[in-house]
Image (cartoon, rainbow, N blue to C red):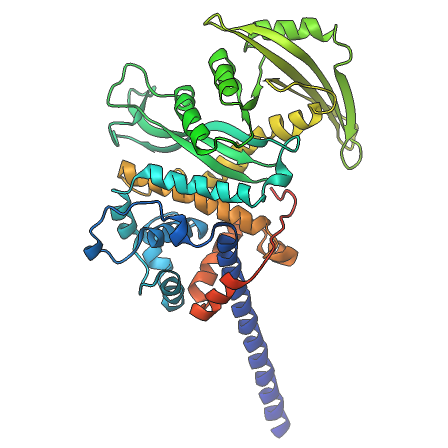
Length: 475
């Protein structure tokens, strides 16, 4: 009997020790994740107070508790944690550990509720929050974080594309786009045009946003992606006047006005060219390709040399647009052949028009690192924000002005999440344990709720000199 009691006591002691070790390791892991989040933000962008210093606060200072920077940080954390609704801030982000961290960062006791964010954002100038997004990119460029991902060691690849945001069964605001459905009902919706900086390793960072919206009810012609691009272009040039940009766009933008605009802004472009676009250019490409025999290149690649790419290109094709203006452009075609284990071949064809001078030395980079990377704005950008926990298609607010501010905060959060997940602070084992960006959001929320970081700990983090390296494509 005594032996049995002794064995039971020993077993209980062992179980208690294991449980204690488990909780200590869990606390250590959560603290490590929260430190990685705060270190990533501070390393690349400094503190939120300085980042949001250009956003004017229109509220009565005698009646406010939380700064615009604190509200912006709360909104970013909502997206980083994939809460997908404003009310979840109150339900999931408020507890003693989180309040202590927030107090240390912003000097106030408590965390704002989602309604507090919405009330403030209704009167904040969205263009000032847009400049915060631009400033994050400027800081990445100045610190040469994105240098390794330039095409031809010079150009930053910027993808242009539009996507849907939210839809309504009744008019949401005077700027709603409308579509007549087959059942006779009218669909009201909002779209957005994005310029995202994309990289071969899977980054997709918002550079500039143009909301696609009607100027008023019942316009003679609705707003569209092309019109939005003509508004976005001067804003993009003003925000990044000296940034070497190579735009990658779909066939919608293949035309004289876009060519002229890019040349005026000193931008390079790679625009998808289908057989139905610019027929005179397609015809001249086929006619001249047989004459320019030196403009052909075939390469074999892949881990097992299972991919064959055949390139051909034509230089200095003359194109006259509908305004009788002449443009000189080059064209590239890439036919890729892949073989499966059974030897069955699959052929894929791409074609672009460009204002780059194409040669055998740059055709592979222009096609693979620029033209074909256009899909990352859809997959790494829009699809992630729609289906990866950010809730791009969720209406976070009914106020049109506040909705734009929330959208910009989503772009900042998505950028931080990518820098964190692909960065070295989590370590290879950390990324393997997390599994995906979506899982990372869960761990960030758990760390925010449970990891205690007081003022000395956060000051020590900010004082640390660190270097962050990025892993290859994990998309």
